[in-house]
Length: 440
Ligand SMILES: [Zn+2]
Image (cartoon, rainbow, N blue to C red; front, side):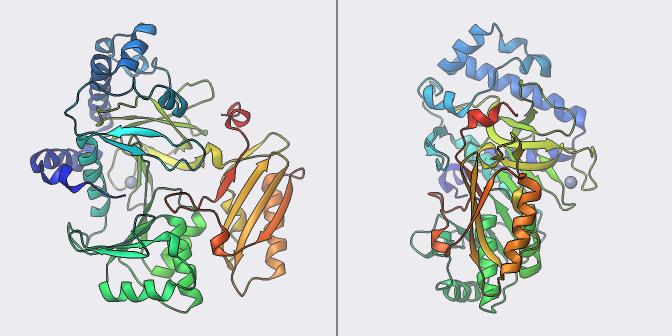
């Protein structure tokens, strides 16, 4: 995540207001927060009705006047907004107000068509305040402290940004050949905090381990893709620090962040989070459904009840010892595209669990071309044995059933596909969403 500094440095008071609200919001009672959120949802709907042609037409079609939204079930009458609708109605989804400081953004399009959308100055400020709160979880963190980042953002192999004191290392260059150079840079700049994609930080740790190099951090912040349990365990052990996972996305409607008690809180002060079943009804228990979110800050292109294409479930726990009253998510299952559909018609997510006995795999990726076949691409370390392959196949079979063909392919780090932003996706399934969709 990179920030446009001019967006918030020029409005310090606005930023301070958002920051102060976000500091208090987790500790408001559930009732108080529900009331605040409902008012904000009504306001964003009223704004969309007044300034955004797509919503003007939609509210008319469904015969809903946003002024009349007085409870959550009124709000739930609004149909879910899918990525395809955003692509098809791109022009009509933009606000007619021109002074919002909107900037055109794009998601990586790792699953097909890239998605374009506008983000305004306010959401950029709110996102900075949001990350500020997350980094604040680490006791020694303060604005302006030195940090390192492994992601696809660095221009070239690496870059030290003096203004922000961030050492940016490019995940595209993470390889056995470059790891010593990255290590030397980290020794030189000594950042206490590291942030980046979990897959990149995990691979970095594995490469360091192989070359018997050791690094320690105070905290590591992961985000932008699901943090898999085996990655978390390894990263925390190897770098001897706590990992804080913060799930957000480019569209800026969702924010699910881990607290110091290890629970994932849906941060309803940034975006409103819902989990919906296959017919679009909100799920109240802990079954898995689609994560649908409403952005509460962005006016340039409001996304109301936006289908994030991620699957998640609520926790049975209603209270957390950290004191936050934000609802607790049990698990983010991953994207619908990241779930394997078996020939028996079952959807299987979180396949990382099948790798839990394999300590000698540096990087892996599961690719499903069609319902009958999957290919597991593996970058083994020197200590990898045939026994581990057998073990992995047994574990995969337990989860995927007997009918699917499992092919194992040994590859180099460079042969593992990356998204344009340098992320490694653990599962890539090309089985059409429509085929899977009936299941959720
Ligand atoms: Zn908590």
